[in-house]
Amino acid sequence: MGRKVYLKKEKNSKNTETITVFLNGKDVGYKNFWGATETQLLDFEINTSKGTAYVTSKVSDSKSRTLQYEPNIPSFSSFVGGHSVISSSNMISEYNYNIPFASSNINSKGIIHLNQVNVPKIDRLIVPKFRDLSNHWAKSDIEKLYSLGIFDESSQFFSPNTPMVRFQFTVGVLKAVNLRVLEESKKKATPKKAIFVDLDTKHPDYPYIESAVEKGIINGVNPNSFGPNQPIKRAQAVAILVRALGMEGRAPTPGFSTNYADDKIIPAYAKDSVYVATELGLINGDGNNRFNPNQPLTRAQSSAMISRFLAFLESDLKQNYRDDMLFFD
Image (cartoon, rainbow, N blue to C red; front, side, top):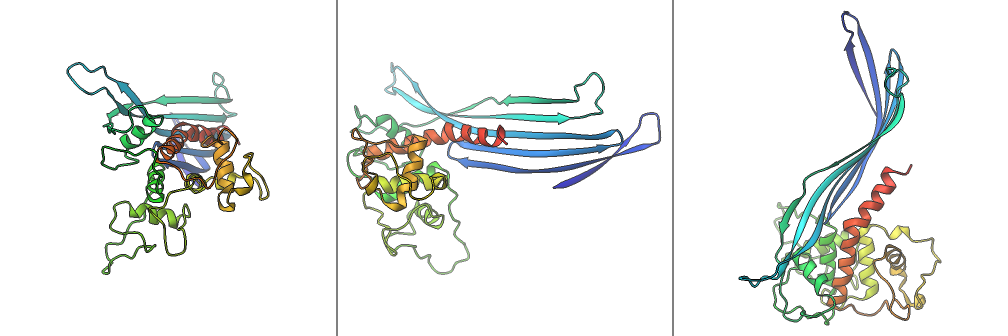
């Protein structure tokens, strides 16, 4: 809530008019790997000597990145193509006004919509070459994650059919949502102690795990251990995805059932997340409509899951957010 007072000098006169503007509103938004959206909602009440006018403004400013593959037919070069990140931004707005004292040639009531699109920026990415992915079904998903820095191992082999471990999956998801890691105080004289006995604070990705635990996105396998090299199960992975979005609260009230044939064996801690992830299109069942919550994820399956997660962050989340905040009361 705020107020501004303006003094307007009348033409050909020494008289001045006092115009008082009362405003009330809020800013809401989100930020992730693919960009950010900030929406500003403001209500104005404008008091003048001629009467009172009302204006409601809804402005949404979005910055987004998309990944595009650009093929290249090799001639003198061995490069067959690569990915590019296209960064773009746009602003859409709606102004609803009621100005009873407007001049006769201007509508006193109405709605104005504006849209501004800026010139995009294109950055070329390096596509890693793994020797064991030539015809693999998840090749494009895996290359996408490495091109974007979600995964960053340096090896000629990806080993797509081996289990994905808890540490790498968690760090990958947190990089995807652009989680702001906890900052370590530089004034500490003693070495920092890890939150779990099986984690190394010197690992460059350790802050992601610490932040995830602090924010309730993931827990240890027991009070003292994180189990960084343990295979991650489907239920655990889905819980991490949905908690990272902060959407676990969108599940129905307790007592609901998912539509999976093996609903009864889905762990209680993951049931809300499984329901929400299914509704968002992030996961689905197998040919027998089973979720298989205790089945370990392979590295290829994990890559495909995080890739779908990124697709949701890239487009669906922004669209759903704008629809909820800008066009609905």
